[in-house]
Length: 367
Image 1: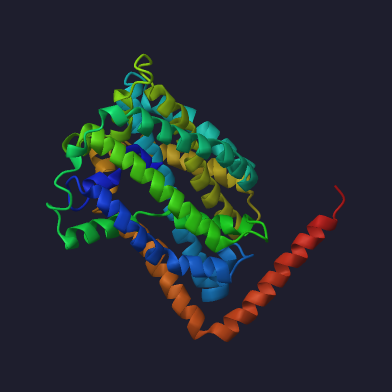
Image 2: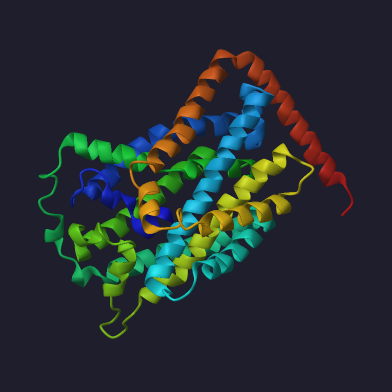
């Protein structure tokens, strides 16, 4: 929902109408940057993220890596929540105080996170298709308003280096691979991780491309690049059947629950990892505590302002953080695995056996 809200690809190299090409090329880099974590997910399937780190790097370093990922999830939770509520405050509810918006948003986020992976999965099967359907509806309804001259000159103003540099920055923002890492533990045994990953990336790419092209063709690059939520501005221009106006409400109808779902995923993942580290404290308490912390962070005026949000959302901050945590660290872990392959495989076998024994003992308990 982060790219859905403010389309960061519009404000990266080559800073012109060719950003759609950047999005296409970024698919190659997304796959390259995700390969280390994808390998780890497949090789260590059946283990939690904490167990994976402990198995590869040892208990002390594993706990440190788990904390790093908790901080990543907490950062995404806070940043995405502030971006979403800034949009609501500026565009929809300018008179509503930020503390009230935070309170109303955090309650359902925390509740969903407490309910766990099963509830998140079931909500996603309902909300995500609705989001995809509305993207198609708005694209089709906006065809009459689209001006293909807005994409010209095609690739004439952009160099090969600019396109690839923009694609790398865009790919470096793709933190969703960390969601795959955590939720791979909950997949059914017959689910194919590689198939699900590549299918998800393909769906993401196609629909984000439709959104970007629709926005560029109607608004043009110069206007779209300065809008806080360019896709929302595009939907405001659309009319259905030449009579239904203000259909942007349909966009908001799916954007809001989609945003809450994404934020609840980050809250759940942070609480899940902490619960696996400190098992005496329940995941419920961690979820509530993390949400309270995020509420405090988002209430700080120095942090919750447009300039700061533009900075953390720009190419100067977010891509570097995600690249380091979701590519560099996993790449080092993969290198360690191949250097200590025999010993780590032995630890992996023992960890999987322990998990299977625990699951079997839980299944045998009377309901």
